[in-house]
Picture 1 (cartoon, protein in one colour):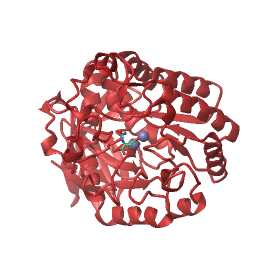
Picture 2: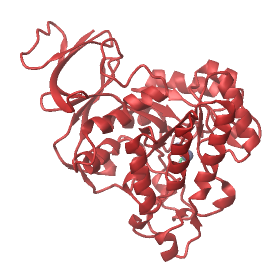
Picture 3: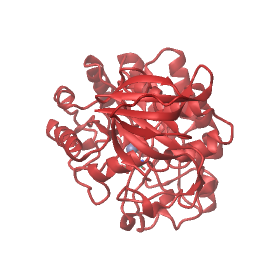
Picture 4: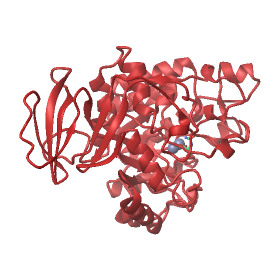
Length: 428
Ligand SMILES: NC(=O)N[C@@H](CC(=O)O)C(=O)O
Ligand SMILES: [Zn+2]
Ligand SMILES: [Zn+2]
C-alpha cells in the first residue's frame, strides 16, 4: 500500500512558514518528506494532490465523549469517530461517563473492540477512578490498564474526597499511569449552571464561583507533589486555576493541562439569554478576565494542549430549558476552524503554534507515537483548506448531535481529508 500526498503545504518550525512538500506513505508509515516543486515519480501509488492545502499531523483530542455504551441516542463510536475525522482528528481519548461507566476491563474491551470494528480514527479509552464514578471505591487500576485504559478519570464529576484522590494518585503512580481530573467542588456549585458574573447577576441566577474549580486544582497539585503522579487538569476555565498550575509547574510538580475552544472564545457575557441550552456546559463560560487568563496560559505553555470536550446531547434533552438541560456542547467539527479563524487569521498566533497545541503537545504529554511529521511515524495526517470561508451549519454535522453555540459563525480552516495509518478515512 503506497500513497503520495503531493504539493501540500507543510509547516516548517525552523523557518516559521509553510513550505511545499511531497509526502510518501508506505505501509501506513511516513516513508519520506521531500521538497515540493517537480512532481515525483509516484509509480503505481495512490496520489492525493494537496496543492494549496495545509498538510498537518492528524489532530489529537485527549478529551471527548463518545457516549458508547449506553447513550447511543446522543452518539456512538461509529458516528463519534466520523465526526472526529470530519474535524481533522486522527486520535481521540474517550471519557468513561458511559452507561455502564467504563469501570471494568469488560467495558474497556467493549470500547476498543467496537472502535476496531466500526471506528475510523484511533480511540484511546480512559477508565474511571472510582466505581460508577461515585467517589466511594477505587476501580481495579491494574486490570483496567491491562485491558487498554490509558489513564484514570471520573470526568463529569470531581472526586470530592481528598483521601480518595490521594489513594488514586499513589496507585496510578505505582503503575506509571496518569490521573486526569475534572475539577469541581460540589459544595460550591449546588444547582447553579452559569458562572458568577455579569450574566448570572443580570438574570438573578445563583452563580458558579471560580473557586469551585480552583479548589480542586490546588488540592490536587499538592497531592500530585506528594505522590509524584502525572496529574492532568481537564478543561481549565479560570484565572485562579491557571495561577495554581503555573506555580505547580514552576516548582516541578508533574502537572499538565488542557483548555477547550469555547473557553478561549466565549465568556458569560456572550450568552444570549435563558432560552438556549447550547450555551450551557461544564465548566461554565466564565468572565472575560478568565478568558484572557486561559489564552495567556495556553500561549506561555502553562496549559499544554487544546481539547474539544466533545459532549453530544440530544435536541430533546437540550430543549428541556436551561435549568434542566444537561451540560455540554459538541466540538469536533468546529474546533480547528474556530481557533484558526479567531487566533491565526487575526495574527495573534502563528499557524505552527496552533498546530503544535493540537498535535505534538498532546502526543508529548500522553507519550503517543503520533503528532509529528517525521519519517517512520504513523501516517496520521489532516489536509486542510485554510482559505475558503464557510458558515457553521450544525444540521450538517456527522455527529448524531448538534448542540453547539457556534451555529452561523463564518469560519475558515476546514479539513478536507483525514488519513489514519495511510488510509483516507474521510474526505469531502
Ligand atoms: N463538559 C460537559 O459539559 N459535559 C460533559 C461532562 C464533562 O466533561 O464534565 C458530558 O459528559 O456531557
Ligand atoms: Zn469534565
Ligand atoms: Zn468531558
